[in-house]
Amino acid sequence: MYNPFSNLVHETNWGVLVNIKRNHFAGRLGTSFRTYSLSKSAREEYDLEDREKVHENWNLVYYLQYQLKPEDHHWNVGIALTDIDHFMIRQETNPMVYLNGKYKLQKPLTLYAEAWYFSAGNFNLAANYFGFFLRAGLLWNID
Image 1: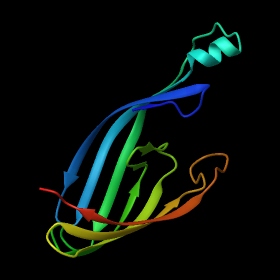
Image 2: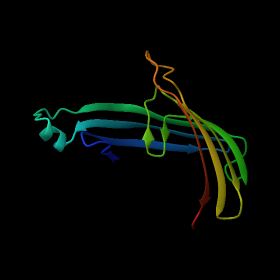
Image 3: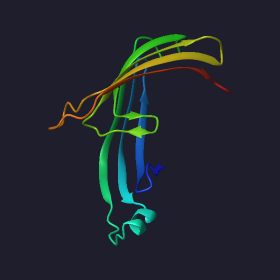
């Protein structure tokens, strides 16, 4: 993933992830490599010659989930502990916890809801921000 999140700095992420699914449990385990570097326009604007980059190598990526019902059941509720969410990879020392629920309305349609909590640096020497958000939607599985 290449993320030019500002005009001055951009981020590059590479990773490997292995998925495991059982009746009630799901897990992912892997590693990621993150690099931060100054953009060409930032080096030109501030007259910087240094092309040094900041590397975070071998970051642990994990996802552990338990669900009340098997995966193919028409409704389900679960809880998970993770440091990844779609395109966001956090540091392994800042886990996120989320509750999720889903209900299959018809064959292609599934209603879902998630409640996420970001920890406030529980395993760090300094406290970071914490957060809470809700995500809900309708999934349409096109075969």
